Structure formats: C-alpha cells, structure tokens
Length: 91
Image (tube, rainbow, N blue to C red):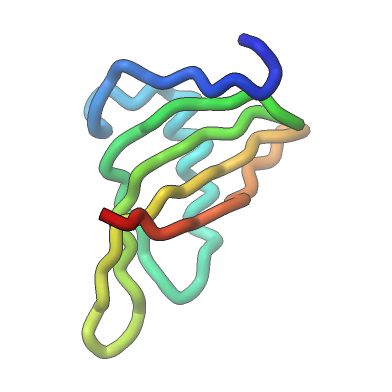
C-alpha cells in the first residue's frame, strides 16, 4: 500500500466486514451524543497509522432521534483506535 493512497474495498455491508475493520469500528463507542450503525465499509488509507473509512447512520440523542448519513474515519496508530472525523454526506 502506498502512503496516502486510499484502497477501496470490494465488500459491501457488514456481513463480510474483515476483522481489521471490525476492530477499528469498536472505537465509535466512545462518541457521545449520537449512536452509529455502520452501513458500508469504504476503504483504508495509510497515513500516520492506518485510517479506515465507513458510511454510517447517525442517530442523535435528541427528542426526535434525528438521523443522518455520515462518513466516519477511524485511525489506528500505536495499537489505539481513534475516531478522527465524522462528516455528513450531502446527497
């Protein structure tokens, strides 16, 4: 894998999510104020550590349980997973 290049995954959904993606997704539990359900594993990018990309459904903890579709990036570095970016997808 080349530094900075994004490798897109061919699998769809979560039934075939590789273990490395499942391990990265576990970091999302530390986000407060919303729940996240992974919809699609997009790919990974070698930067300072490995960055994993997901498309996810966000459900806010407001009275209406407002939902959005988000791009979630989680970075693995030094054995630690950190949510590094959560951005709305504009359709």
